[in-house]
Image (tube, rainbow, N blue to C red):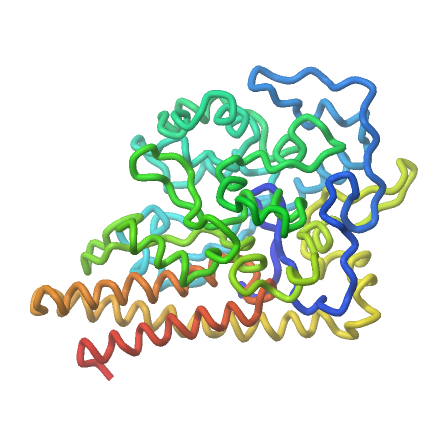
Length: 419
């Protein structure tokens, strides 16, 4: 099974597979939370808000009779289950070397839908008795509400203790708090990281991006944090410089001693950060491609079944006037990026193995330089691979980052005297 198709990603508040080739179409959303994406009608305020749970969260099931269409399509996400998902450690066997000494070398599967966020985090072999609650960020609205109410100290609590209190996977509160007529960025750390630039991005995109982003855990407070303070700083090179300046590392590679970084899922940064994708420049939000318009006995609304636009006839029809073979275009982009990912992964493994073999014979300065090359090359590669669109979100940026990974490796092989 190739990783060359758009997938429904489950680790955040909104699935992102925004297709850069839609540039000639007109965006259907203004970014105003009162105006829904994809042309749906803004939901009316309920006569009475259902009772919240002990965390202050109105659970999804409480809204089912008030917004039956939205609820039914939200529940349809359960069809995208963990069964049959790709095992990345098999698809990219180099990862056991690249991630050696880190949790992702123990288990790394393709994500299921938002319906399974709690299930997935409870089943992953990456957690242990030292894992902290910050790993629950974006897995349940109950944890988000707990942090917003009690403060950053929640992040440093024991993982198992906090997870045992949680019952609701990603749901309505993550995007709306308890007011379905509004779209809200509930992850305050992400809102702070965007800062004044929030005015330049549709709120629907920010709501998805609050979890589909690159983050790290603050070494002192353990709080979930973002490595930038505005849109301009949201590209791989700037983020890498941010980490280098603060001396941050996720782990030390056991074979080479290199201070390594693990990219997360930088969909938002890839689309809206740095030079931005063509889609972002024209004002599109994630919802334009991933929440198709629906009209049934409940009226017109945006589907809450989050999926690839290539799997959505309604979205594809909207784009057909400008794109005669959009699926063919996207598949071709993805094949190019995925082929490069595989080739560069093989080179990173070869470099890592060579550095491990030579490290005891290198002087301190040369070793530090070689270790930094490993750190940088792998981060540029990882940034593309874990972004989950294989170039469809921003084809130009994907190739630019893979170019940087290759350039780092070329320098590294020369340093080690390897052709």
